[in-house]
Structure formats: C-alpha cells, structure tokens
Image 1 (tube, chains in turn orange, green):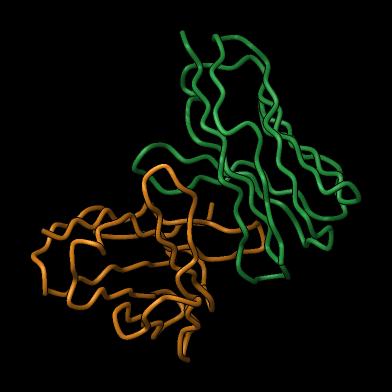
Image 2 (cartoon, helix red, strand yellow):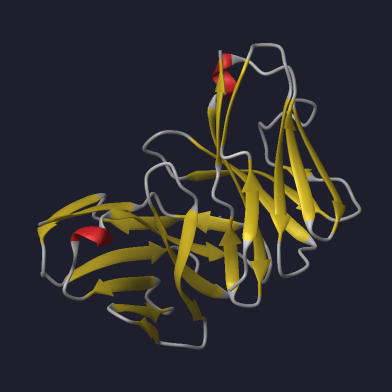
Length: 113
Length: 112
C-alpha cells in the first residue's frame, strides 16, 4: 500500500535551534501534503497544506516564518521549526492523499529543552 | 464549516465483545469518509475508506457504514481483542483532495 515515510521519529533540541522534519512518499507522487500537529490526548490540528512547486497554505494562527514548509519535489515535503522553543514541543505528522484515501507518516516527537 | 463528532470519547470493553463506534458530521456534502486507528505515540493507520456513494465497507472484523443523509457513520468491531486497543478517528475531506476534518476520537481499551 501507499507509504509515507517520516523522519526523524523523535528529536530533542535546544531552545533557539532549528529542526527539520522530512516526509517522503515512497511509492507514489504527492502533489499535496498536509502537516499536522497533535497535543497529548487531542486530535490532529492542521497546520498547513504543502503544494509541490508553490508556497504552502497555512492555517489561521500558524506562524509561517516559524514553521517553514518546502515541497520541492513530488515525493518530498519538509517542515522546519525555526528558533524552536519549549512550547513548540509536540507531535508532528504529515499526510498525503491518494485515490485510496489519505495516508499518514509515523509522526515526529519534538522535544525542545 | 464541517464539524465531526465522535461518541463515546472513551470505551472499555472485555475481550470478545462486539462494539460500535459512532461518528457524525454536520455537512452531508462529503466526498468520502475515512476511519483511522492511532496507537500511542504513532501516526495514523487507515482502516476503511467509504466513498459517498457507498453504504458500507468491510475489512476483516471491521465494518464501517455511512448514512450521508443523516450525517452518520459507524465503525463496528467484531470479537474485539486486546490488540484493538487504540484511538479510533473518523475524518472527512471537504472536497476531493482537500483538508481533512477529524473527530476528537474514541479511545478504546479491550481488556483481556
């Protein structure tokens, strides 16, 4: 089946540093990918929609300069958390759509210390 | 704006029991509806996708139904097992290929 590979699965970084999360579609081309954030015991919150070759569309309240999204190819989208702070600690998940429905990455646990 | 609600928020059952998870949505103009499973600290695993023209889909012990006119879907799990313990999420896209709207999920615990 369709596989979306996301890595790293977890990362710990110091405050003020930047962290890049990658999301790859392994056996299909994804013109659109979605980035979600999930807090403990809560459902997924859409952060932005990533479109290949164009700028991402951010949801209201999401800082585009803090959460940089790049979708340079049909198989790779990246989310960079810039100047990370402890409040950015969360679980980040990417997703892509296929004919068979949406498929999700395994998620990245970000801890900022 | 589409809103998706899942009931119950949490469910604990003994092993072997059949159970039903409920999902309701406010805007019946959906393209499809998808059920997911999420284990703690993991991503989402797709369980079943029901197109708007379909009434139900089955996969193994899972059966999902869809009633667009009433804005409801159910996920039926037969002969539950401890390995079924997870959070179950339903989601609908607003149009083909667009963003998903998720319910808050049902946390299922199946006790041995």
